Length: 529
Ligand code: HEM
Image (cartoon, rainbow, N blue to C red; front, side):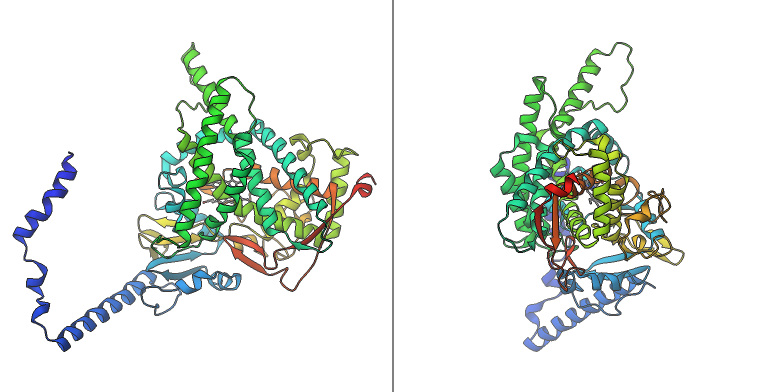
């Protein structure tokens, strides 16, 4: 038995012999009924006043309610997030909220957001409050500092040009199959497509990540169950994962996903050991590990190979990395695809330019799978992707946990334990940087446009910044540009505008409030025009 556990076992015995027990200090049995009642009232009032005092102390000079609803704070509001409420909190550079006594500071200027994202000695990523329960505490996304940087370096091999070329082949196959299904829909009326885009996106992710190592019925199962995870992605959930709560459902969904992903990792290791060709992200990863091992065993000059991955990854560890990718991508990508299709229908002049570019690159060839070389020759379609991401940034905020008091301004230090949230909407809708920021204008990214060549400008926070910036930015551009470009080439679609089309619904990320009513029809003749 370890020294630690034996000390823990012996402690109560020694304390009970040296300290008076609680009833001997406050002998409740000696109190009359009214005395007991008034003692309890005094105790409760003291606790409630202490809670209010603590709130004001943490808030300091920052704006925010003078008083908090006891215990739950603004929990009710956080259950139904709305753009209107978010906009109110972004009206000030720093705003404060409390939910179940979790003190939250929301930062909404570019300078503050960047300061937080680059303060890894003061902060660590906490995603949303329930994320550790859902993704499991050992997941690499919760690492920070040097150990995080090292781990992340080992994952860079998953997003090389060579790896992206493999993924693009898989994506092309899945989009085309989805387009066929949408075109074959006999219903003449437009219908909401946001959940359909979501399903296609999950299928794309799982096939890109796991190839054919996951059976179709398991892809379906993960996709269906994953909705439970999306629904649990509230900033702050009910604190206990009791059976029936959203977090409890999400943890059950995660267990199923991890089981299938672990099995896929094991199958990829087995297949790649026999020298097979890489067909998916897992294969590309295993191939890299095998190549590194081989190099290590055979190197003659003792030189280290750059980006060498020398260690093994267990099936479970690989599954958790894939889960983190699904977690990071599923909702954001579904949101961006939905707005991409909606905007192309609402701005026919933009769609016409996309088609012109697609035809210039592909000619009459609508059948060959899209390639990385082709994508490089599509600056306008890429500009559409960039503008969709700016106009409707799918990740509005990234919560961090303050692990050491963090001097935010000259007169305000964010206390340890605070959930500190940089938010990006204001940066991406700043009229000084993006003229007419609420308009959808892909031309701003083209030669002669206001933002041409400014992809790395200070305000471009779509993918965050600093050590935890999105690892898959190139993948995102490839995914969106390939999908929207091919759709424009192969189909026509109409968007039924409703009063809610331009309003935003928040379910983990942003979607058009009406779910985006679309109807797809073939474009065989026009494609040849
Ligand atoms: C429209 C799509 C996407 C958007 C807008 C987006 C945005 C973001 C943002 C804002 C962050 C946090 C950055 C920070 O804390 O500074 C992030 C992190 C991350 N993203 Fe993405 N993302 C997208 C798609 C993806 C995809 C497709 C993947 C995986 C295939 C992915 C994997 C990750 C990972 C693993 C992290 C955490 C990185 C780390 O902690 O080192 N994301 N993403």
